[in-house]
Amino acid sequence: DVKVTQSSRYLVKRTGEKVFLECVQDMDHENMFWYRQDPGLGLRLIYFSYDVKMKEKGDIPEGYSVSREKKERFSLILESASTNQTSMYLCASSLRARDRGKRGYTFGSGTRLTVV
Amino acid sequence: GQNIDQPTEMTATEGAIVQINCTYQTSGFNGLFWYQQHAGEAPTFLSYNVLDGLEEKGRFSSFLSRSKGYSYLLLKELQMKDSASYLCAVRADYKLSFGAGTTVTVRA
Image (cartoon, rainbow over all chains, first blue to last red; front, side, top):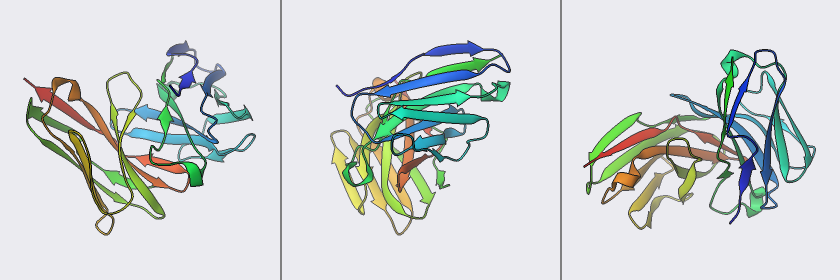
């Protein structure tokens, strides 16, 4: 079964810490995405990548950066964690545009981050 | 970004039918998706529409009208396990943009 794996299910970090969230997919997908999900706001796109070493800002990139050194791995970095970054973070992947088919994205199980 | 609206909550009885509406405004439309998300879990794919009309898949159906910027998800013969959040998502280029989700509660 195809998978998107996020390294941590729950994380608690202190304000000001540098935080790394890791995501790995085994489907050979070109596109990878990071979203955060908050009650009443739905999923909001932080960053996405359509190829190795490529990255594009989503709708809410402030306070975040990303790294994609290998095709299968896409990391989200919180440079200096703040309490307003407490959220559920979801990673997703999809095929390149012309091949992406009808399933949209495959999501990981999410990382619930609490910044105290 | 896109502007995607769907109701916040709906409640229905086991065995009944529920229709979740979604309206959107977008440029570069390239498909509309519905996802199901149980509490604490990842969203899972339910349906996809890119052309106008109805797509049926078992107990779930999804409808799209591109000219009206409108879709609905129809859940028939509701079961308790259908209690979940249902997410409407619009694709443009590489990206999916999501509505805030509709929480459906199925009562016995």
